Length: 556
Image (cartoon, rainbow, N blue to C red; front, side, top):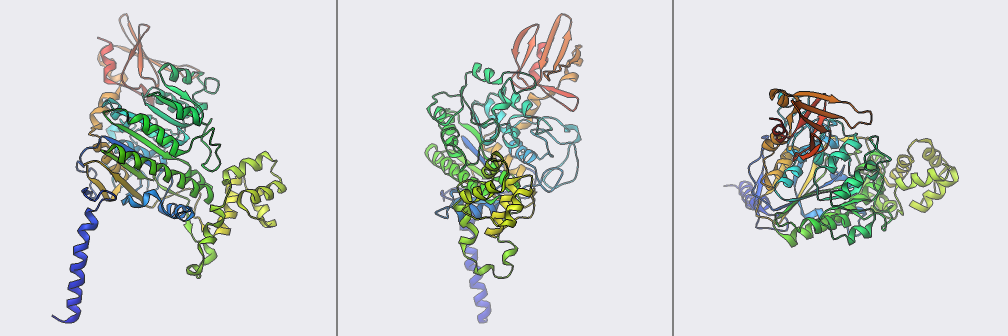
């Protein structure tokens, strides 16, 4: 054997000895077994975990995470020791995702199309990771949150957006239109979720809703402790907590008033404090919503600082997982956004000589985000003087005459100041929209279940979480969502739609002297004037209505 061949064989053997250790090693828990998933649509059973904490930094791709790490004082993220693979973000119909169908894939294990929430799509586009079934078109799909509740587990949703926004809504509502915030809010109220923390109070208020319903009053009647500031949240002793800290989305982390709006880490800690009281376990989805919102404006301060705030919440979740045991923490973005890059056309050839400070100096020293800059500039009358003064106050920069003109030239001042900061910081962007790249998969596992690794579809990751909880969603979907008209007409009942101008439509089934009314988006029926719990929602869209199978027993 010649010397070169000997060297090749020795190197090959050395690599072969290292690979199994790399495959089997578990971040922080070296005795855990990994599970690799192939390109099949379903995944093998990974085993069971009592608790699942599913965390989503909306829009938080790997380059945004890298920027956040560089901005962080210690250049370290809680996510760093959790990395196990990548997630393919395509949806059932297109290669680039929207939050609604991606979150639906995580919540149901089934890909769908935009802008659907908890609902099967109607387009067959032959995309990978999905086999279309026309019989299911537009049908509601049961979610992991709904199933966990029916297992006797506690459930929760936490977000820095309005809680009716796409990601939390995908776990707690069923509609083909993610923008129907009032409808989504109503469905959420009747989903029996134990902890709801975020923004979006206006969608619950009687004087703000088109239908005039006082959903805050309903929430209180259901036994929730309803809170609207940080200390009230922390002081609450209730096992059912509903916290609304803003009329719509909450402010970004470095812009918020800590007395009025809790951090994502504080909301995470409170949610887990409550949910962990249940001996049967819990499921919770926690979203850092506004990494994405900043990226849509190409604004690097908000993107980086809200990612850091999200990572602090991940640290809290890991601590709870270690304390509780039998818990799996999953962190994954729904998609990337903005095409952010550390470097732009400022340095096409000399990039290897650029100091870190150029990229992160303005961002790490910022006093507020571009979002807050825009609020203050609008409040100050959009003057040149205000644009200059606020840039100096917030970002420590002296705007040039050209930069002032640019800032004031755009409809979105958040975007225009983001352009200035990005150019000065050599941060690049390719779009104001989402991008189609894979996103990182991060898992912290203190259970005996196997840890998912490799490159998987978003729907497969959803299936992983579902199987960890020992749930089968297909039977639950059949139990919760049966076509109403077909079911009642088979029993000889007359089915009528009663249209209401305020949107509180009712479907009515009548047979003989028995009249059953089904208010839309609620979990009960009214039988001859008497309220009867159904155990699930009445959902209506695309000229079709679904009710729980239990509803048909109300008419003989």
